[in-house]
Amino acid sequence: VLAAVGTGDRYGLDIARALSHDGVLMGGEGTLYPLLSRLRKAGWVDTTWQESPAGPPRRYYRLTHDGERALAEFARLWGPFKDAVDAALSDGGH
Amino acid sequence: MDPAAELAVTRYLDDLGRMLSPAPPAQRAEVLGQVREHLDEAFAELGPQIGEEQARRVLADLGPAADIASAALPDTTPPTPMLARSSVPWLVLGLVALSFIPFFGWLTAIGGMVMFLVSPLWDRAGRSAAP
Image (cartoon, rainbow over the protein chains, first blue to last red):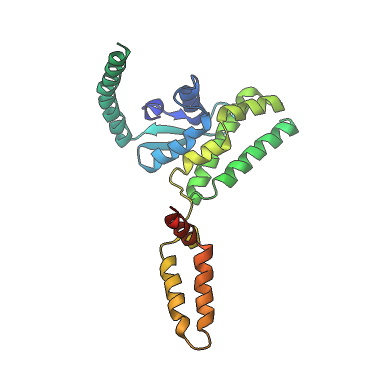
């Protein structure tokens, strides 16, 4: 979710579609919102209201510095973790 | 929006609001607000005439209201039933011990026995006595 929010401003429907289009990362789009709410409370995500070109004003989400740090830390750990799982799976296949 | 579509959306939001009622009010309002904005945005994309089928598709993409509520309330555990609390065995002992009081003693003794029989203590006693 932090990676989908990214450093640029994105609104809810936009993030929800990015995460749920393949049905792997998120089953339904709606479960995103409690997560975003929790990330905002933790100080990792910030929200601002902006006018929308079509329809009502939108709530935009953006990573805070703490959120960027948490995402960078996750990315640092994810590489070795993924490699270890890949190695275990290919060992198990032989 | 078609009246049937409007009804489907209202029902969905009502259900979600009800399921979120154990959440702190600020969190409940935030999640409901976000979901409402999501729906407004999705319907704005579809144009002014939204039929029931289109509304149902948007709601299906959002997923069951129960999933959203359970994602908002992950730490909710059901409260311990009153008669399963750890203080109950002491209360039973206390009531039975008070049975020596003249005139009223029999009342506390019966109260203690009834509490023992209706609480999970009786089931536990039965299980431990079984071979």
